[in-house]
Length: 373
Image (cartoon, rainbow, N blue to C red; front, side, top):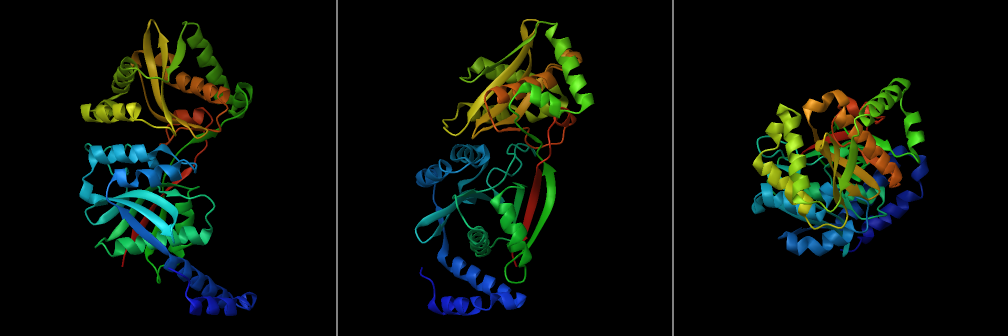
């Protein structure tokens, strides 16, 4: 759809006097967004196979997290969703793809695909979002979400529940700076702090990393590593994962505590194995272990890709708690990130104490709740 000449004429006329009045400037901005919105459309794909080429082409061109990858979204949908409730949406300006993403209808609300709780109230996806094309302007990002909200308003939807949106996300910027500030003309949008995701900017050397820690944490880490090394412990990672490694990870995860044992049901175990075994090119799965006394005593499952390590889940044998085997394995993986010249070591959601003892800083995650009126 082309630009309307009357809109352009009004926009250009007002632009000449933009500096003279804040009200005039706001009017110009409103007209400009209306023009953009008129050009942006939503296409709903009928299946993952139909959307595959569009999705994978875009994800190959932009930095993204595994939870927004085609393979992960497809896997989640196949395990936990009904096809009728899934919305696979592409947002286009003329014939150019601006953004793509998956959504799920739960009752009369829309969630990011992958963000609902499953298997008795468990969370399995850490970040919610869609994929954006590179180089979009702020007005285009706002227009994308305005178009999506208008689309869902026509589907008998009461609202959007957008969980665990990162503070550096284009979605957060669009709602924080655009949609949320224009409730009367668009929709009511509340943006609230929800959780944190601690992370490390990976330094250039282990020595630099240790110096970043507080004096107390630095002393404790050195002491615990020295104590463990006296036990002839060693660590290793399996990139080409074999089933035996996965079974050991599950054993240690379930052994860690009652909450993790409850989390890792047989159905959840099957989902985790599918994550490990899925064909993917953007991230690989590492299963890393700490071993002593001729057995594995701690394990971490990570996503590695896009210049970052994401620590997805872990477990340890409580009988070796004295040696802080879980903490030390995390420290060894930080060293591995340094040696691999990664940029970010991401502990993902949760404010557990050990993350901060290892020097992590918070990244804020937000809930964006949109009421469609």
